[in-house]
Amino acid sequence: MKGRKTSVDQIIRTLREIEVLQGQGITPVQTYYKWRKEYGNLNLDKAKKLKALETENARLKKLVADLSLDNSILKEAAEGNF
Image (cartoon, one colour):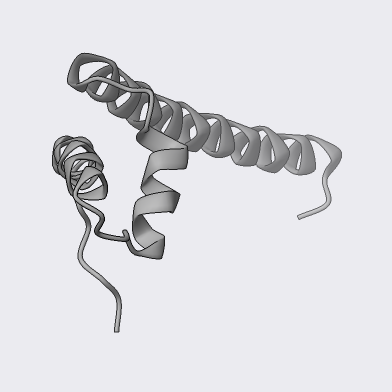
């Protein structure tokens, strides 16, 4: 069973809450360390910008893959290997 996706905003808020709890002597779980490693130095503005860049990067990768496939098909057709 897959866990639900947590938004970047929620992660950053949770990281701040856990920092407060750590001050009270409560030990965090492993997920905290994973999130802190990835999002610990981000504020909400930077996190939103990061998410937008990741989305744009995924779109561009898909576009490059599609164009590469089209190029490969055209080369095969030009060579007569179909």
